[in-house]
Amino acid sequence: MTTVIEVNHLRKVYKRTGKVAVDDISFKVEEGQCFGLLGPNGAGKTTTLEILQGLRSATSGEVTLFGLNWQKDEVKLRGLMGGVMQHNNLYEKLKVRECVELFASFYPSYTPINQLLERFSLTEKKEAWLSELSGGQKQRVFLAMAVVGQPKLVFLDEPTTGLDPTSRQEFWHIIKDLKASGTCVMLTTHYMDEAEFLCDDLAIINSGKIIESGAPSDIINRTFETPVIKEPRKATLNDVFLKLTGSSISKEESYA
Ligand SMILES: Nc1ncnc2c1ncn2[C@@H]1O[C@H](COP(=O)(O)OP(=O)(O)OP(=O)(O)O)[C@@H](O)[C@H]1O
Ligand SMILES: [Mg+2]
Image 1: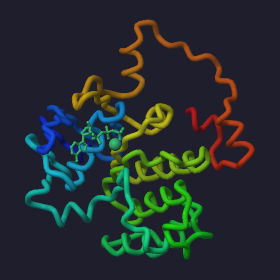
Image 2 (image 1 turned 60 degrees about the vertical axis):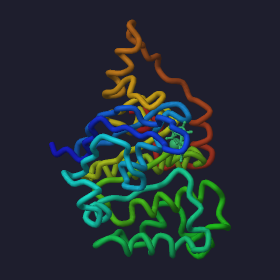
Image 3 (image 1 turned 120 degrees about the vertical axis):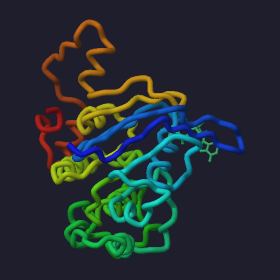
Image 4 (image 1 turned 90 degrees about the horizontal axis):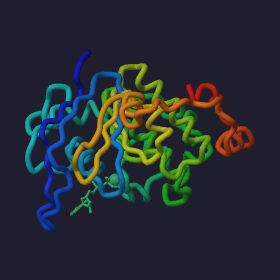
């Protein structure tokens, strides 16, 4: 397997405040894997993702992506990655179609725009200004922008916050497809079901330090001495929502 992300002893101290946001973290992510960064508000997840995306400098430590680094190989790296930032008001003056076309133009090849808009249920809104969209619709546009260029590595910072349950599960499908095509995904989320469903490996970060890491099932077994015995799962309110509002993913599949 090829290592796509390698992080060694990464540290970030914000100069103005002296805040140690990331405190000596190290991890690796392999090709085709989804790696999750979990942790409470202010734990250092966004800071880490921004450093990995070359949007912020590290105080110390090393970040290697595809064996390349931001100091020497910025142009090459930009062509291999896509991403969604947690807070993003940059594109309000563009239409949905224009946003996705703009991002497609950054890459050597891309998914046909209409096909992608259909996949994200945005066809009806393709001529709408971003400022006219609901929060969840905007989030879907950002996801389409992140994947349009068929990147080999995608960074997603809380990508499903604000999505309705149906859109959230459609998004899970899209991530599974991306992984199957060999794309590596790095994700932060506050939804534990999402992390369990999507992540091959994850790290739990607290006050800038990794306090636990590994495959979700290994972490659960390590954390609880007595194995957690799963009862047959009853329907939940989430299932009711999906059934009544229409979803493309079955319950069995989502809990597999
Ligand atoms: N530009 C900045 N200047 C100074 N401190 C910052 C800056 N950005 C973030 N911080 C601080 O660094 C710490 C980590 O912030 P970060 O945004 O990485 O957390 P997070 O894990 O993404 O949290 P959330 O779950 O709320 O998104 C916090 O204490 C935050 O206040
Ligand atoms: Mg964050």
